[in-house]
Structure formats: structure tokens, C-alpha cells
Amino acid sequence: MSEEKSYEEKLAEFEARIERGEKIEPGDWMPDEYRRQLIRMISQHAHSEVVGMLPEGAWIPHAPTLRRKMILIAKVQDEGGHGQYLYHAAESLGVDREELIEALLEGRAKYSNVFNYPTLTWADIGMIGWLVDGAAIKNQTMLAHSSYGPYSRAMVRICAEETFHYKQGKEMITIYAKGTPEQRQMAQDALNRWWWPALMMFGPHDSDSPNTPVLMRWKVKTKSNDTLRQEFVNEIVPEFLALGLEIPDPDLHYDEESGNWIIGEIDWDEFWRVIRGNGPMNRDRLAARREAHEQGAWVREALEAYAQRQAQAEKN
Amino acid sequence: MRDTQWPRYEVFKQDRPDKPHEAIGTVHAPDPEVALLNARDVFVRRPECYNMWVAPESAVFKMTAYELETIPNWWEEDLPEDAAEQTYYIFNKQTQRRSMVAVTHVGEIKARSEREALRKAIESGQFVRKQAYMWWVVPESAITSSDEEDVLSMFEPAKDKTYRDQSYYTGRVFARRSQRRPEDIPLS
Ligand SMILES: [Fe+2]
Ligand SMILES: [Fe+2]
Image (cartoon, rainbow over all chains, first blue to last red; front, side, top):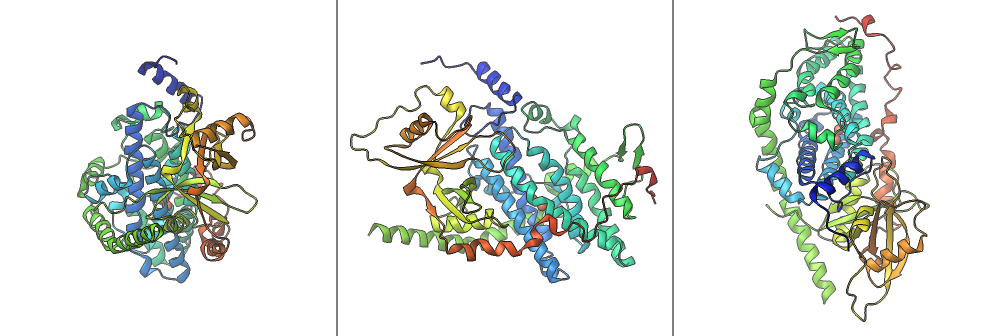
């Protein structure tokens, strides 16, 4: 029998494994802090997918064509699936999905701020696909390299599906931007309202993100909030401008030297206000989630009763 | 409110008859039948599924390479005298490359317990090309499979939903990705 290793030895071994690019799997030794950070991140991520179904789901009955309706239903279904992949990844760390869902329904859990803004026009559906899913993909592509096996696998599967979300949104906004003056105005209005919330999705500045150093050290994340945000801005700004849309940021400019599009300061007061539950839609989102959960209760009861009866019949 | 924490089932998806089953995640369900239905909804919204297995997560014996290395005599156990042999399905993961799959089905072994099955599988050398990072062992009796006749109703409909695929959108509306330099773009 070998001697039980000390915490420091185990930690050194763990970090060496991550350094070598190995995946950490359920069952492997990991520091409590790694587990805690992962549960925090993955559950927030799962909740975001589930709550993210609401702003878009609200437009399913109002889709202008059958094609658009099928696309939107498919996208919203995907987001529900993404939530399940992620709850699964969180459960591999020893929490119950039920605990996490309870925290969400009771308003104790965080999810992405962007879903606490209202979807006012049909053009918002296109803008969410392009801008919001675009920002999410940026983050998720990075997380697909995460050191934790189940998280990275969930991300690879999600990224493969997200590309369609992004493309259908970009298609819609491209058509609107090239369409009638009214359509063009709808696209511009949607961009005006979603631009800043989308940029806030990358989280606070690195200097205000206390979790970032440890997450990067353990390769849960491989890029910081500000780095990802800048990459995203550099990719998407030229595309909007090429369509003749205006970015609602008077300070936006191109910096020759760095090759970056530099944005003006984000309204962090608004960011924190929404996180603390005082965004335009926080209450509605939770109320809708709770209602859906309660309305599904009879289905769960029926399934449970059926399973029990089957089990009983098998015994006899 | 605690009414959804049903048992978890591991889901194994087979893309085509000539491909092995792959572990792709879990679903919660009150029984294996519903587990298969949930698995279809969660994991097969797109094409490429021929068959699916589900097995209660609690019946899946999992060991990582790290555990095999660090748990001394991991194979030791008290087997009852009359422990009978049964068939175990063996799965492992042989790559650290980016993947959506945890482990892949590599074969079966007859043994009296999951630990014995794993030890035999490793010692046989027939299930690993270079290295295995993770092993799962599942008793055959714990697996529920979808039927071949389910393919048409459960998996085929996804094939018509081409709009779920990003390739459906390319070229429809978009010109080629803008090659213009930023300074050429009017900042209207
Ligand atoms: Fe998603
Ligand atoms: Fe999405």
C-alpha cells in the first residue's frame, strides 16, 4: 500500500495533469475550489439556456411564416436541450438537478442578464440569434477546451448546434437590413436595444472578475472576459457596418495600431442592477418559469404513477 | 417541488448500424421506457441515430485511468461464493481530443462482477489500441434498447428538418464574408 499523498502533492499532480492538457473526469481527485467553481459556472450556464427559451418562445405564435415558425421552434427546443446537457455536466460533480432547479425557481440562482430584457418586435428574434447567440458561441467555443471533461463535451455538442441559431438570425437581419425602410428600421431598433446587453454577456471587466485568475489557472476558461469581448466586437462590428446598420455607440472607433474596434464604456450600473434582479424582465421570467413548472406537475405525477404500477405488475 | 429528481439514465447513441454506441449524457426518467423517449428529445433533435440504449446511472461502474493508478488493489472485493457469471458491456475512452462523447462501446466480457469484468477487459488487451483514459462497465441486464421498428417514428423525422442545420443557410442570403478593410466601411 502506498502512503496517502498530502493535499499539496495531489494539487501539484492535478495541476500538472491540466498543464499536460489532460481532461479531469468525474472520479478524479480535484480541489474543492475547482468543483465549487465548476458547479457555480455550469449551473448558471444551464439556467441561462432554460430561461433563454422564454424571450424567444414568446414569439412562436406570432412568427410571420411557417418556415420562420419551424426554425424558431427548433431553436427554442435546442436551448431546452442545452440546459439538459449542462445540468448533466453539473450532476457529474455531485449536485442534483433538482437542487439547481429549485434554486432557479426560488430566485436564488443567477442566469445570463441578457434574458432579462424584453423582446419587443419580431426583428428581435433575428437580432438575438445573430448577436446574443453569436456572443454565446464565442464563450462556448472557448469553454469547449475546458479542462473538465463533462463540461467540455457538453460545450462541443452545444457549439455544433448553436451555429444554426446564429445563421438563422444573421439571415433574418440581413434580409431586413436590405429590405423595406420599415424592415430596416426594425433591424436598427433591435440592434440599438440588444447591442449593450449582448456585450455585457461576457461579464465584468477582468479587473472586476475575482474568479477569472483561478479559472484560467485551472483551464476551466482559457480566455478572459475582456479578451473574448474584444474578439467578438472585432468580428461583428464590420458585419453590421457592411449592412449599413449603425452601432449605438458614439465612442466606437477603429484602432489602427492594435487592429481592434474600441467600444465606449459599458454601463456597469445597469449591469449590476439587472444581476441583482431589477432588470426589466427578471420578475416575468421567473414567474413564467414557475408557471411552466407547475403546469407540468400533472405530467410528472402521471409518469410516476405509471412507472410505479408497471413495477408493481412486474413483481406480481 | 421535489418531484423531478427521477433516477438518472446514461444514454448511449448509435449513429449507424456499423458504428458503436457512444455515451452522450444522461436523462432523468421514472422508467427505462420514458428514459428512451426523453433521450430522443434531448439528444436526437438532429439526424444520425439508428439505435439507443439507456442504463440506470447507478448500474454503470466507472473508473478513470487516474483512479486505476491511484486506488491500490482496486479490483479487490468480497464476491459471494455462488456469484454467477453474466455478460458485461465494456466502454472506454481512448482519446483526449475534443469530443462530445464520454466513452465508446468496445465489446463484451463474461464475469462474476463489474470489477472482475473490468480487470479481465484490461488484462485481455483487446479493447485498447494505445491508452484508455476512462472505463465504464454495464451489466447487459441493466440495458434497455430502442427497437429497430422505432427508427421510423423516433429518429427518422429529424432528417427532414434540414433547417436545424447551419448548412441550410449558407449561400441563401449571404454574399461572401466581407473582405473589405475596416477603413473602407462607412461609419455612417
Ligand atoms: Fe444554447
Ligand atoms: Fe442558441
